Length: 64
Image 1 (cartoon, rainbow, N blue to C red):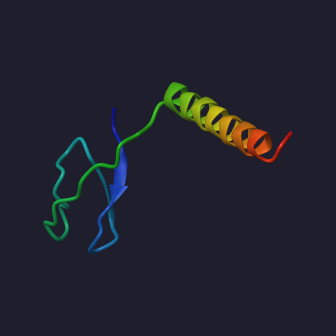
Image 2 (cartoon, rainbow, N blue to C red; image 1 turned 60 degrees about the horizontal axis):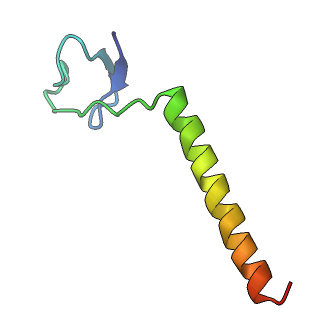
Image 3 (tube, rainbow, N blue to C red; image 1 turned 120 degrees about the vertical axis):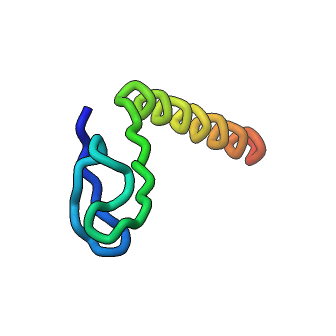
């Protein structure tokens, strides 16, 4: 898969399949990780569960 990234130093875009070093200035640029849709959905479900659990504990500690 071809991904385009922007160089941190010279701010020019280039394809990552060619090289990880910028062809313009030679700076090594790390490719940012790409999270899948399933991972994002899982994180939303987990953080929602955490929020419900904390809310329930606060409610029960309050005498509810």
